[in-house]
Length: 304
Figure 1 (cartoon, rainbow, N blue to C red):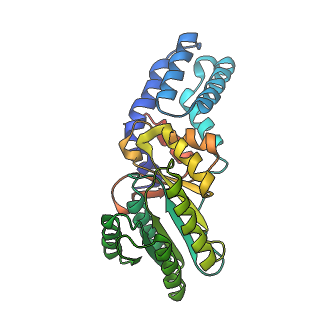
Figure 2: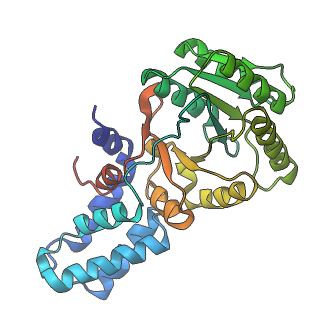
Figure 3: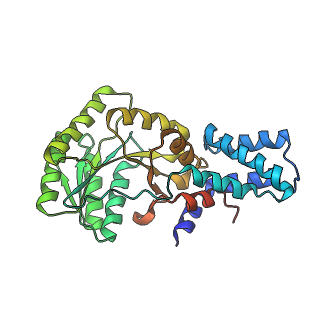
């Protein structure tokens, strides 16, 4: 299955609502009425595409109707505006020119962080990179066991401590092990934490400080894993995490389970953080690098 097909299939809940609803409003109309604009605005906002992006699309649609009349391609206009809102179509994962690249996975509880850590390891491994994972969510014994299970399944080594161990110490050991084995990547699975809990955020800062002391510049990527089903509420999480640990990008999970796929656009528009990957299913290869053009085309697709 090609990338566009994966996006379209993963975004089926969003597109079945968004593309067809837009088409229904504008189909056969030679002019854009106030009622049509209001309905389009409601449809776009309901997809969690965000107010700023909604206004940008509506402005472009008005212009298209003024110049093209009934020939205006509203779906095409919306797709183009969303694509343009991203600085580039892709934002690849960082890779150090020499030595180890450390990726820290952060986020609130329940976003799929541990699974995403494993999927990213699988993706890098399939690209010929050597990868270790560090189980720094030491507050949940289940998280350690889950990552170890993924490690066995993917044939990837997992550095872990005991339940309740200091997560910074596990991160330290992870960098030591990855460096000793000349690994290309170390992916650090941190504990889920509410962005409102200052003590937990300070602990995350400590983990990052220890990593930087062990390997200058680490972590080289700090990816916030957000759950698409929470819609634009995820923007609040991103703002708060970014205050405590500078984020380098976002990973959006569970896009296949929500009608609010537009939240990817809304959050990027507001925060200007690159979308590195999106989760489009449960299988290891369902974590896909984000491509703005193909995402936009799939988001507004009216194909069955």
